[in-house]
Length: 196
Image 1 (spheres, one colour):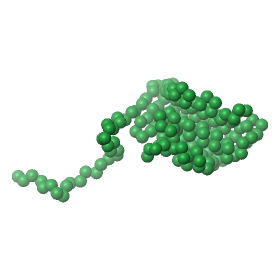
Image 2 (cartoon, one colour):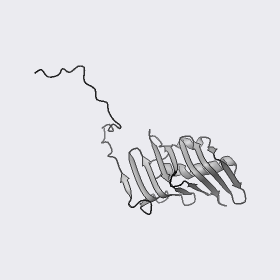
Image 3 (cartoon, helix red, strand yellow):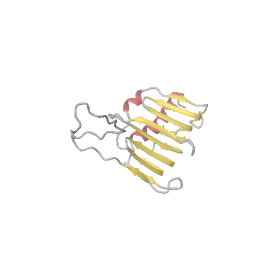
Image 4 (tube, helix red, strand yellow):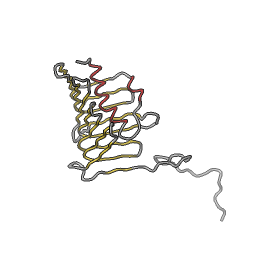
C-alpha cells in the first residue's frame, strides 16, 4: 500500500488534473512539488484493497489547489494507476479551486460527484456540474474531459435542463482587458462647468 501522503497525492492528482486541463491551460505546475495537507472527520485505510476513504468535511490543499468534499475515495490499481471520487451533496457540492499556470486567475469547479481515472486520463463531473475560469463558465448535468483525445463534453440532464455557457469576449491584441467590477465616478476638479 502507499503511505498516507501518497494517498493524498492521488487525491490531488484527481482534481489537479480537472483544474488544469478542461479549460486549455495547465494548472500551476509548482503545486505538484508542494506538501499535501488533508483534513477529515474520519479516514479509513484498506491496504488489501489499496483504498483510502476520507469522510466528513474533507479538505485537501496542495499549493494553490484546494478541494472540499463530504467524502473522497482514492484507489490505486496493480499497475499503479490512480482513481479517485469526490462526493458532495445537493446542498453542498464537491468543489475544487486552483491557480492557472502563468496567469493570475483561478479555475473552479463544482458538482455532486467528481471522478478521475488515471489510466484513461479522464475526468468526469456528475450532477449540477459547473466549471469557471475568469468570467467564463459552463454548466451541465455531466462534464467530462479526456486528456488523451482532448475531447471535452457537457451534457444536460436531470439537474440542468440545458447546457449553459458564458464566454467572455477576449481582448484584441494590444488592447487591455475590460475592467471588472464597478467604477466609482467622481466629479473632476480640473474641468469647469459650462457658463450660463
